[in-house]
Length: 63
Length: 309
Image (cartoon, rainbow over all chains, first blue to last red; front, top):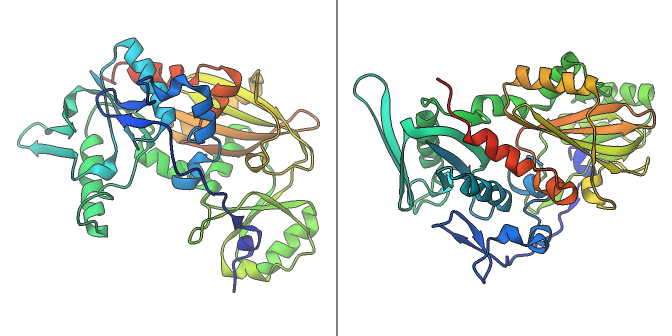
């Protein structure tokens, strides 16, 4: 028998697979191709979704 | 003294805090436990007078005694990226790493024991009630007959995940969903199910508690909307925290022994904030982006404080 709650589950929307930043182990944060910290770009922060309210539930179950 | 941040590399929210710590001139080591063993290494010895040891992350070394605080943000599973990954290796790595860290004087955001307890939804509701929050009538059951009775009493219901996790393989999401009281409840027997009386809300509230720092944000909502995480139709705006809620948050955080908590409320048409949950590791980046509330700075300031003596 299917658990009741699963009747209301729906397919997850796929996140973008590419990110416009890379981790810089020396600075211990992510940087853009031009070397600036990724957090300098509001557009990047919004587009990547790692700061979003559903980001946690995808991997760590804390939104 | 050094701040230790446990999180994955792609965590931009952690970056927001790392940048602030850099600005403050506070030394930090950031690592992902998934890289233990590998680019993360550790050693500790108990010869006399307690454990002495160190962690190595890439080219950085830090002694356990020099840790001022530990931020458990979005850590990977210990051992997950090992060449020969196994459940046993994960258990060994987790025990070694977190076991060593719990022997330090460092302040935790949040301590793993407190975090584990705080994730239990029934415990959250229990603690919220005793802290003075308004809590919606809630049922967790595997009895279809009890679910039917609850539905008959409260009529307007939502169903949500007990654990907060979403089903996987294939990836699914389980938004909080409004249901008819006349639905077939037979499937309740196949898994514990959480029902809650639906709060017709005029706004969502996210309150972020960082140490003694409280910030709240409000997002207008359609009264028929249930889970705003999946609708994304308006922006968050700063809102003052009512005194009664402030006191309840303080009580909750003290009971939970948490340094960080992200509280979700539904604001009803009378203005009452109904407690929905407290995510001990909840996101805050999206709130800061909308409201400019200095949440990353508050986290950094808390982490930068001296350890307990």
